[in-house]
Image (cartoon, rainbow, N blue to C red; front, side, top):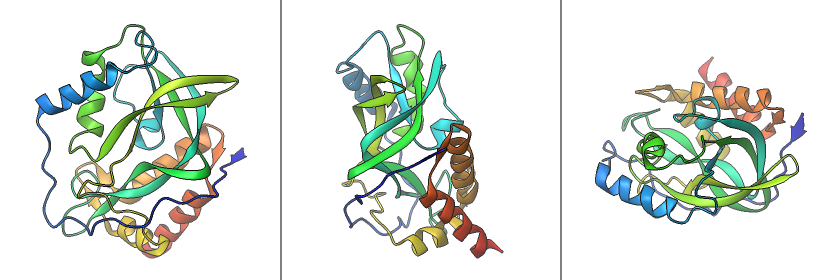
Length: 219
């Protein structure tokens, strides 16, 4: 097992929980975002995705190859309000996002799609990750074994109303402990990610401690 290094933290600041369900963007807007992102793909004929949250244990696209990988300069953070998938406006949950963190590294999975994958193969990913444009699609370089691989991932969009920012750990635990939405409890979302990371050979002490804190609140 390896231990995640993190010496930086994301910027403090964000928005309070939304009081109403999030409004999805139109399919046309999502498809335009997808096409624009693919137009800047470093390797158009070989698309890889860096997964750091629920995509690790539930990818929504065909995977031709998978490897554990690390992304330098970012950390995984519960910084997106969830008032549909893993929470409600009355009891909001939180979702993962990537945040810029100086000196940090984020471990996850590198999923490579079949050769020639394009808009049709990636539309389910855009429907899931860009449902309300809470993220920005980004091309990053991750390390998988001895290889440096360009990969698509999704980073926090601080200007979005669902951006929660860098909340105190006690507050994060309290929100996760009480929230549940269309796709299940926020606690299970956290636990499944911890289990998936451990299965890939990674240890994230911060997430493991957070899960313990959540379970104590639920007792």
